[in-house]
Length: 71
Image 1 (cartoon, rainbow, N blue to C red):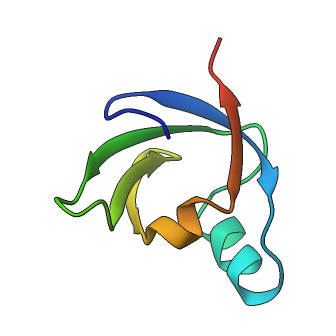
Image 2 (image 1 turned 135 degrees about the vertical axis):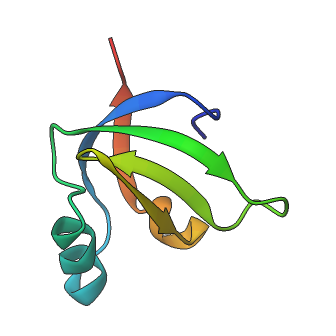
Image 3 (image 1 turned 45 degrees about the vertical axis):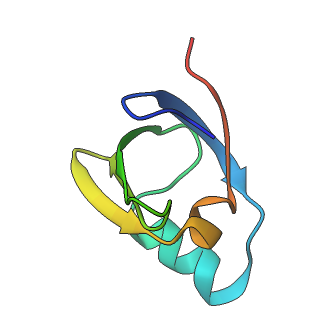
């Protein structure tokens, strides 16, 4: 629920198994900042910037990343 251009800090993941490992491999690790770059017209997929590069995720995958507001 982060707006386009908004940033947040990753707290963890609610996923498990292969999905969790994929997110970690892509750089979605706790403590790292993410930014919402753009969202497709129908809301899926989302383009996120993490660790200096852009990653496209399905909304169902993105919802499994727990974040907190950047302060």
